Amino acid sequence: MAKDLFRRQVAQFRPYVPGKPIEEVRREYGLEEIEKLASNENQLGPSPKAIEAVQKAALEMNLYPEATAIDLKRALAAKLGVKEENLVIGNGGEELLQIIAQVFINDGDQIITGYPSFNIYVTTCSLMGAEVISVPFKDGNYDLEAMLAAVTDKTKLIYLCNPNNPTATFIDRPTLDSFLARVPEDVVVVLDEAYYEFARVNPDYPAESIARLVARPNTVILRTFSKVCGIAGVRVGYVISSEEIAGNMNKIKLTFDVNRLAQAAALAALDDEAHIERTVAQNYRSLQAMQACFDELGLHYYPSAANFIWVELPRHSKEVFEAMLRQGVIVRPGYLWGWENWMRVSTGTDAQTARFTEVLKDVLK
Image (cartoon, rainbow, N blue to C red; front, top):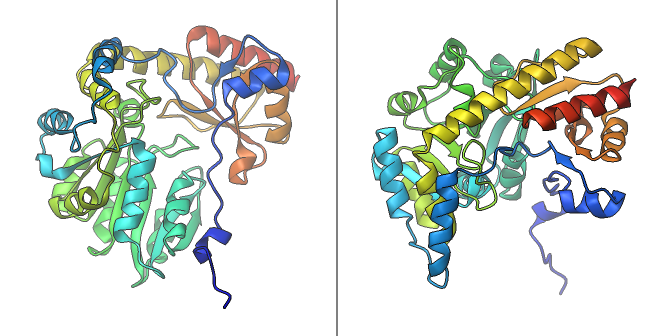
């Protein structure tokens, strides 16, 4: 008797396409000097304290990690002013988003997200059988009124990436508070704050997310050590939520998902404020140089509150992307989101930023 071997959602599944790795570009184009400004990585490198901690932890990597990441959880709870029971530690934000989908989504449930935004929201939930409502952006940011209008009795999750990836724009404080006040209490709002440390220096950014969680328990805040701490390669992220939501997420996550080296790196990086401050300062210096270049070229862009910027090009982004690759600069073309003439560029060191602007001018001239 014939039977369906795979989940029916797998046939329609569109996997996330990661940025082009340096090694592949090196092989394909025969280049030695390559600047990767495509994956929103910390170009200053890891926290020095994290490096030291990993070197020490490597001596014990024959041992399984502590399953609950208890030392990291305690340190985070103290720093954030929450209980340990409010936290979930995961193997990067991507695993945590997968757990969110697994915890909440039943076949036929509905999620609402903006477009363009981080595609993992769509892939994780659609694989669980969710109906995805993607609301197009308006003037470079979330159309929150249209998202509210899309809410039905089937709506389970609303995703807000703040600042958003790939546009780097953010929802300001009064706008977010007005929106949250009108979302039904039984709808869970996921606030993805992967770029929180970069955005919080902006006076209008709604940095008080934990207070919003206290007022609205059906809220999930997602943050990461990958970006500002520079430890993307070992994968550590965390969720802050109500004890009920965090408890259910912790119930189903893999036992040893956060490895020993990752826990050591995150714990050491957590209080390395000097590295965080250097990273944020360098980020905005790079953004200023890029924006000056875009202004000189007459390119439209949105002001950034993250460690990347979204810029409109005079021709198709695939063409520009490939031309820049040939000169050893990797960026993220907007056609991957369906925005053919846009490009996302990660910030870098002064030298990397100068190289990017030089190559862009050469490609567009």
